[in-house]
Image (cartoon, rainbow, N blue to C red):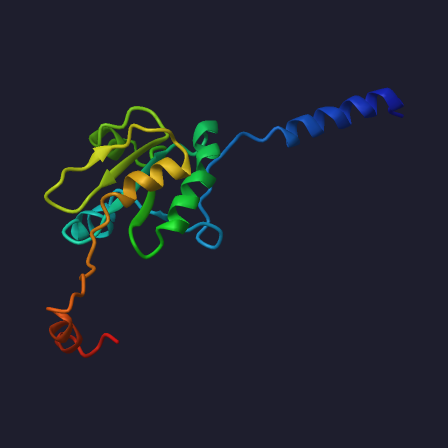
Length: 163
C-alpha cells in the first residue's frame, strides 16, 4: 500500500510534469489570420506579388517563449490588415536554411516586403501590434482618386462597374 504522503508527492510530480508545458507557437488557420508559409511556397505567396502587394513575414521558432508571446500581437496585425496586406509567418525550426538565407539569426523577427522597386527590410521597432501595423501600413499603395469638379464626369463614366 502506498502511503498518503507518497501518493501526494507522486501526484504533485505528475502535475508538475504535465502542467509545465514548454511555450510553443501553433498557428491555427481557424483561430489566426496569419498565413503560414514554407520555403517552397515563399515565391508564390510573397515574391510573385511584390509589384502590387505589401507583405510582412514573421520568422519564428516553434519552441521559443518570445515567439509564443508575440503570436497574438502579430495576429492582431493580420486581422487589422486583412485584405490590404499579406501577413505571413515561417518556422525557422522547420526551414532553418531559408531563415539563414534571409539573414535571420534570432527570432522573433519580422521582414517587410513593400511593393517593388523598394527592397525588403527587417523591421527594427517594438514587437507590438500597433508598431508593426503602422510600419506595414505605411507601404500599402493608395489607389484612391481625388474627385474634383474638373474630373467628376470622367470619373463617373470611366468604369461603369464601380458605383
